[in-house]
Amino acid sequence: MPVSQEKITDSQAIPNNLKPEQALGLVGLGMMQKISQSGTSRLRLVEDSEEKFDLHNLRQRLELIALALETGAPLSTSEVAHLLGARPGSSKTKRGGLVAKRISRNVWKLSKAKTDDEETSYWRN
Image (tube, rainbow, N blue to C red; front, side):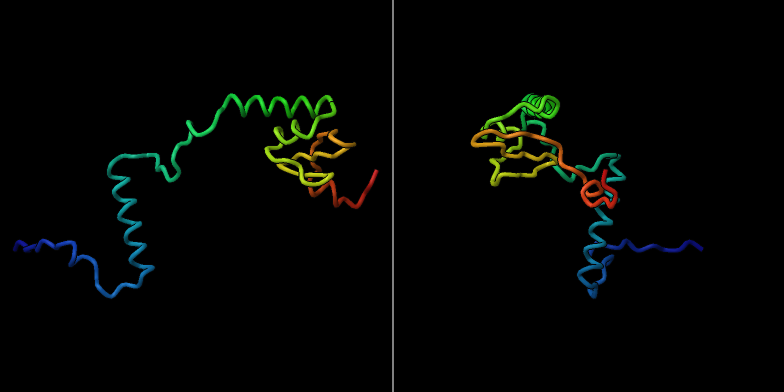
């Protein structure tokens, strides 16, 4: 005996007495099913921002930071501000793994910031 199947509409498929968390879960599940059916292997949650920054500028800045660290050359306040990406606010400014230390007026030295392990080490040399 063949079993008759009724076509279920979308409004009948989702019960009305769902909690908001359950409804959100169903929406997310539906989205994931659509993505897997369409064959899209890469889900783009964050827009690609290749045009939003200047890669050449970033590379130059990183190379200049490496050169300043390697040579230990004195830098002006504006040079330190450019390399750190922000104007130093005190005589010793830490930002992004770098420390800018003021030697005298408008003269700074750039160095690597010590990690937490190095700063709190019990054994000192």
